[in-house]
Image (tube, rainbow, N blue to C red; front, side, top):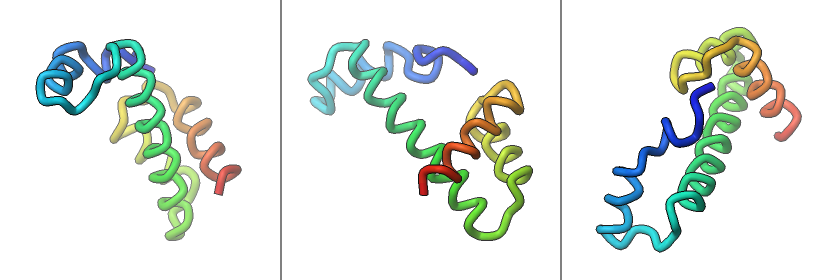
Length: 85
């Protein structure tokens, strides 16, 4: 999986600071955004399973949409979604 900073570059943080959308430092801003991103992935995987897609379809969706580099990482997200909701 890409590292957190690749998903949340400094120029995006600087934009948020300039617009008054955050008062967090860069490291805290990355952590906050990464946590929100993970929650979104889990919810997406859960919805895919809930509407009747197979686990394999949910894994493929996670891989395609969110830059997860290995099927194993995508499966971990789908498993977490199944355990969480």
